[in-house]
Length: 436
Image (cartoon, rainbow, N blue to C red):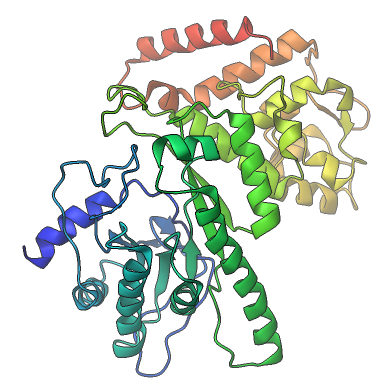
């Protein structure tokens, strides 16, 4: 099998891993080196000047000793197998870089022989790239659960970002669908990486030329929809991971049925893309808006309303919190208003120091008034024509969010204008009859 046949197999096998995004790190090449990493974004992202920046997302091998029921690369699945040697993969990466196809590498692997052996091959690949080719581009490497901490350390000194996929939200789900993995085997390397990042940060402060360990931090990924775990469980786990391990991102991947198993959804089941979308919205509220997981969902409401974003849903359940006077409300309260984002909230704080804000002024600052107008006042007055009955506000907000999410609701199916309107009315009617 030649290199490009391997590439076809191993890039296709890597496409189900969502845990890659903008690099979050700057790395300039040294004299005699090639490539660089930009904090503005790698892997289907965009830099500040509008350039699309991509990376080679590939597996070292899709051969695996584990039998995870949801994985297309599991040992019991009949699929073409391939493996790169470290030299093959390093040369391929440099070849693609020189042709301007990529600016970085996302490297993962099936577990070949054992975790230590697999990690050693990944280390050898990155060592060739960094030392032989002087490649200073962005590299995201997967830590293999069960690998020795010494090997994790060596890999982390060569990579810009690392990730350990938690895969499923609970130990029970892991035991059922991935019996070769455990919560302990996943969290142990995650904890080690976090501790080494902290140590490395201190070393860099004290010693200017100290080597940096995973300067762009670590991330993880959870599969959504393969198990009965609720949105409440998933969101609480994400919050716990952020707090305990200081993760940069928790990625959510809607389960795509690609293998047949009685424990998994049917092959023809559509991926829960809207549920994944709601989790990302809630994740944003956790990281940037000061919400806690238990404010967004609780034991009595363990699933998101699919047709109302989490912030709007929270606001409708806490109408006693509103209205807020836009000319005096503090920043942390402004961030809880639907339609007011971080940038527009900061603009409000700055602008109102010199002028009294009006609704027309808010629109110029980037506030989405079609949502915010129900929850704010300007100089003690609501926007003209506003009716604040809960059913009226609910109706209006669902109309707006349903329109925005119609492509996600309909999936890949192409709809005519009339089909779209009918679907929208059907979903709106269903949501209005469901208590929030």
